[in-house]
Image (cartoon, rainbow, N blue to C red; front, side):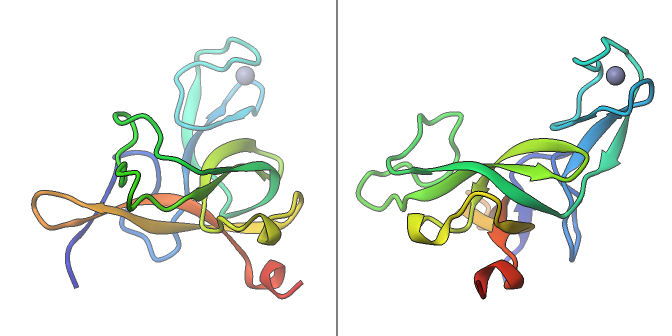
Length: 147
Ligand SMILES: [Zn+2]
């Protein structure tokens, strides 16, 4: 198995069998933020701590990215001939924050607002060193897939 590396440091726990996104919690008003932020947009407080966010959430809204996004910043396959459409959604982590994320599902028939999702890591591309670069995505839980 080739080496795996995270697409960006400090976005999710690494390495981890059960990855979690890293966010911030405001120590003044308990607001949760993603990604990590130094100041709280809710109360303007400047005291935040880095926390591991919940692994599961519900789909709040979604779309399907049907063509390669502008690259950079997009780091995956941007060749229109081989690009594979992917789902993008806002996932609500209960009691915490809504996170914009890639989804593992790109079939609109398999996406439903309110469905239960869990965090996974997916391969994005192979870098010049031959390592597999991974990013985070949300996948339907076994429970959601059986509905
Ligand atoms: Zn705050």
